[in-house]
Image (cartoon, rainbow over all chains, first blue to last red; front, top):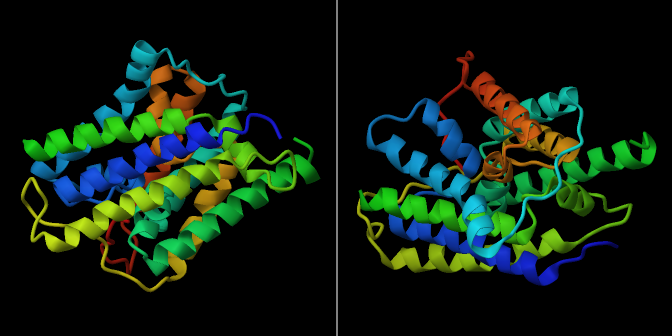
Length: 141
Length: 144
């Protein structure tokens, strides 16, 4: 087991939880990234502004941490373009069809004790693990 | 305007959490999903910490008639699972397992300027748009 980081992962998780609590308590919105982005397509008026502001913060954070704390980027992805496109399409379509992703279902939904989110979270975790199992241990990719 | 400031701060906190926790590193995500291999359970600590902290916010809001910045609380009202939820979650999980990006980290990582990330996010946007195309018999869906 390489690179086990329980403390930094838990600290980062606490920040993610605080972000969800803030957006709900302050603005009454669920911090679901696929919903925030996907909703841009149909949002009107003031509903657009907060979505763009959230995304601006999300994009600025890695650069701020690099500038302030010197936290560098992870290694570049070594993945074929075909695989990136396939995965991106699945993630985009799947999160909209399933009404959420790791943040909306996995963090906010579970924190709200939503049965739908529990089922979604179990299914996407199992599906992700199954794909990694097939790719790494059956196909040896 | 205050709502936009709250959203900006939430985005900053969320993005920082993704960086600090390691969620923004696809190799770490794949190591977490590789339960039969050289398993790295670190990312279980992300959820284990995020959920109780988020729960405090959701619980505290029960005493409030409206959010601090005004307006109204807007949460999905559905509770029963259905076929779309299950199929969507399985498809999303498959894409997540192929590359190691879910939507939040992929968007945050755009800042690093890796063309591979941009390609993934472009495909993700196309996938979202494909779902948004009108289909017979589909009602408007709440966000989760």
